[in-house]
Length: 269
Image 1: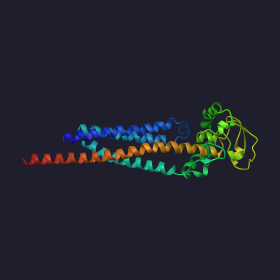
Image 2 (image 1 turned 120 degrees about the vertical axis):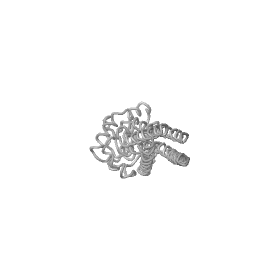
Image 3 (image 1 turned 135 degrees about the vertical axis):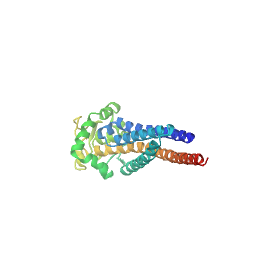
Image 4 (image 1 turned 45 degrees about the vertical axis):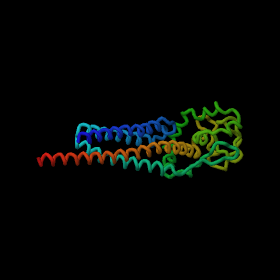
């Protein structure tokens, strides 16, 4: 039984290590400027990672110090957390399954439309109350100012691979026909009726296209890219956790069998 308990403790130590990439994914999301402005996914990911760490620690202690009730708690709680993590992985995949950039004439960068994205994501940015807070946060970043430092001519800018946020928030939509002066200053639109965003554009550097639907779409496109990366990490960790959990269950069952067999022998003798 001592050997089995040591195996259980070692397995739970591995489970503790597996909580690190989950917590790390949440911290990485929190450090990204767009996610820090929206604050949707990072805290659920971090909380799930911390809970897995705590539960695995309980199993580690229960295995090495033979505390049966801690092992039972570990088996039940870890199963719940694995299911919760699985739901989170599927949820992230489902809300990011739609939405992609669109090619614009004579442009290397893509443009984005809000209607392309899932209803759940759109509800996170459509409310004027929510968007005012997000817009203030985004406008305080240097993402648009960086474009002016990097691209001086129209040709360089049109051939640039800028981020979805920069495409949606820092310039007017291409179909409006604005004339390039610099990446964040455009004049003389040809067709202001092409899109409501054409009327929303402002050369005021604190306004730009932060009130545009294209900016909301660019934000969602950025979130989709980052959430998908985090989701891959969570999926790999989920598979590893399931594998570790099943091994732990087998080790716990073997330990119980050894204990029963030992008691039987003692009673028999």
